[in-house]
Image (cartoon, rainbow, N blue to C red; front, side, top):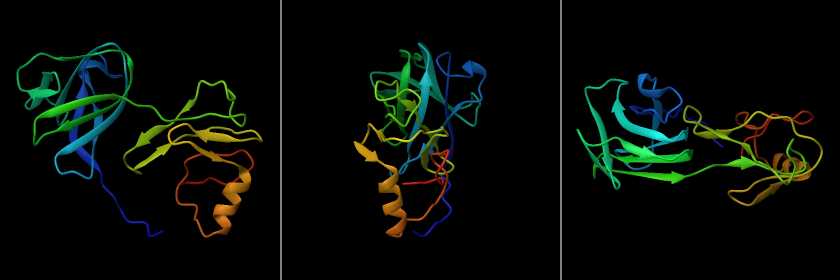
Length: 178
């Protein structure tokens, strides 16, 4: 694995009554994707409204309906939930997808019955992260279906996988990134 600096930040964000900081911001950050002018944000939203704006200011902002972006249109109504928000500035479209990634298992505080311990997207690392204390046992990331045991993690390390950046903080094991 060769680490290299990656700046996925953009000057675009999500603002509105449904966002954690409301209409005054700061905005929920949009991040670059592998497609030019297509950006993604990951957010826990309350029921309410959102818009997309540049530089945390109102000089350039988009709203819309039915997946189409427009200037000066209606705010975008959203239900409460965890979303991946995609904005395409080339085609002037947007998409709201229910999206969540978590950790579940008898090694977690909530066990196999959940609820999952939520991971958060960190665009500065381009990684999903969680800091939690795990007990002896197994856990999995329900999306995708991967079961990671202590033995599997030791096998991966012995096979040459490196500790790259902290993702899961273990109480008895080193920190790992996959």
